[in-house]
Image (cartoon, rainbow, N blue to C red; front, side):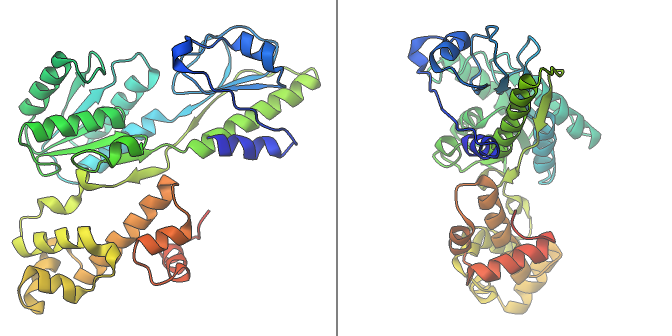
Length: 357
């Protein structure tokens, strides 16, 4: 987000001063901050800012709609809901559910409506659980979520409002003795490392495009600054930024529901070791049968060869790491077992039709 802002503002020679507001100091007051810092314009990126009229161009870069006719850049929450539904529908769940955030944010309803519409279009129904609080020591919270998850027809796919809630769902499911993702598949939002990779099961998550959001906020702010100098005044605008995509992890792995024993063992092995340079021979040795039988059973279950699956899983993992934005191309190529960065670039272009952006 910060990088995107800096990129846009630098185009016209503007710098960026970041002001952090400690949570224990109460709600920050925009008018007071402007008085102290005297900026040319302001981008507000917190959800509980006290909005006061200020005589400066202001853009809200936030997860919550702001009343009062301000420019805003927000997540495309409907697309996030559709993306979550598509991910959970693709792995053959019998039922679906949405676990909502206890807050009063616009995106709670937007994500639910899009998720519900997409699931219903596939002839499925969903249940909804709205958490009363996010206090993890609240016994009532855990008890109500346990009951909700326990009573869902299995296998079920659960879309959680964000990664924190998704981690709670996974914890509750494991506590009930349910398998993730065989019994309960879970998708969160934000790809927050504090939650997606630190729980009992690594979680699939939808990645917002923070950099693009920052670039859009900077673009709008520059336009306001320049139009103010010219005496112009345009209507407020609201830009919705679509998510980058889905980073798939263990909580939605597709191969877990294959009934063919040989294919299931092969898929699980490929899932765990595709990025370690394994070959088809390694997979055949793991399942413990002849090469011809392994290839036959695998093709029956998946429609393609063992080698193709290795290549697909490796590429999917590499693509998801790139979407997450935590590593550069060279690092991702090495992490995913590609022999060289140039080979990875060629495969990426061959599969996507274009190179890296």
